[in-house]
Length: 477
Ligand SMILES: [Zn+2]
Ligand SMILES: [Zn+2]
Image (tube, rainbow, N blue to C red; front, side):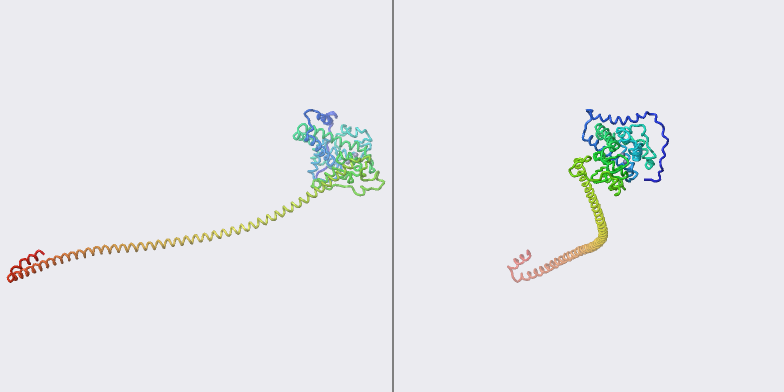
């Protein structure tokens, strides 16, 4: 809520150029359009009926919890955004803008069932209190003075001026969801039912029902109307204490709008729901017309027949189940949150540990790489040295071998040369010796032959006959 917004001063109203009844044409057409359900192409499909019921409940909530309990009576608090949401929702029920509606309702509470009351069935007719005043050109304007606390919001003034926008949007949505059957059932029929359920509070809830509290008006409590209007039927309660968010004051006075508001407050969308003070709830006997008693088991009474009692019991049990379900959901959400927190913490620990391990692994790898690099360098050096040494040794060996070979070759050559010379000398010597030997032998032989011849000659003289044969044999040999 912005406190900086100043109160709105409306400009002077210009007289309308249209005759007043023209403004009632949409309202009348809305009723006539309900007869379209009899067209052969319009069907009560599940989607169309669901739209009809769902949009009735939703928009009735917009009227009772929004237009009535919030904008007219400020029975709870909400944000500026959700205030607009509630205004839009109420507006989609086609009962004019939130400022128009609330300003007239505040006037009703100020003068209820008195001469100045806009829609009292006791001052005027039932017809007038129900629908006549809505069609009257007398009450088409917004009473800006009565709604100064909300008329300062420009978005609410805009909605009040263009109050047909949410309804038209809804009609288009109905068409998109369920076609023309959706428009006829979900929009026309649903809207007309919402109209008359709301109007019944102004008309019948000031005539039929039970009076618990003494008030200055003739408001009544009606369980049937409370059922139809999501809790608005406890109208005597409401006229007795207007500013509470609940109109059903006791557990058996079911008030669906209030249950829905409690649900919204559970989610933080609305807050500070005002209740009924204990002293107001149980006032002095003189302020009470009939005491607040729960319905008798199985016994009917004028206001609450047995079927209503069963319905109330069923509603209470459904609400108890919903409350339990909400509690279970809350517990589950808390547990899930805790689990998520634990999981988050574990994940964080795992991530930390993994990070440390990864760091260690990185360090080990770096170390291993360094060692491997050093080993490789050392190995390379060793291999290089070995290769060098082997090469050198081989070279030396080869060199030695070459030298040896060279020497051997030289020696061999020398030996060959030497042996050649020796052989030559030897041959020559031998040849010479042989020659000399032959010569000597020849000489010796010549000498021997000469001596032999001489010897023979000498012998010849001495021995004739044997000497010629011996001489021939030794010459041939
Ligand atoms: Zn009221
Ligand atoms: Zn009333």
